[in-house]
Length: 169
Figure 1: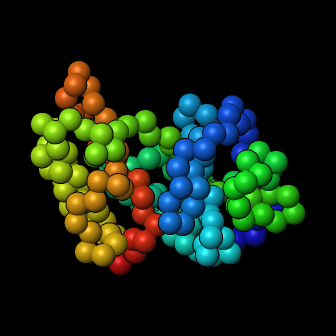
Figure 2 (figure 1 turned 30 degrees about the vertical axis):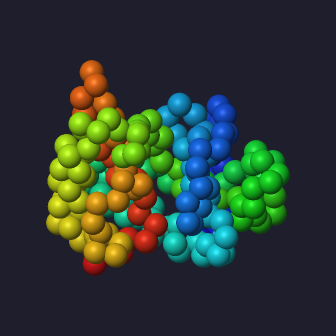
């Protein structure tokens, strides 16, 4: 991927730090969108982030509950906090933009909803297998790779969001 051919993502209403994972930092760009930018040993491996984006897209198109993908864009390095070591080329970094999901982690769910949460999660994972995607490490339940939405204090939806080590069959 040539960073010089990527479009600049605009408008950015706010660029606020959300979280860090094994492969990247996540920043919120607006009420609707967020971006994942590569870090660490993945800074120079665009393929890792591209694979995650392609899996996200395949799952979204296949009806799995995942964030809506938007694509790859460039971002002026000046938008990032100076303490964050993002991959940079000529003053720009690249990232995968997708829908921002506002939800709860498994550990933040009320105890009485956790069995239902696991069932919702397992239902989505079964859909994944039918789309030719292999979750990482014989994927069992991992509450860190999904967010839960509640409605009227009841579990409404699970959204899978971390596909960094998943593979396409």
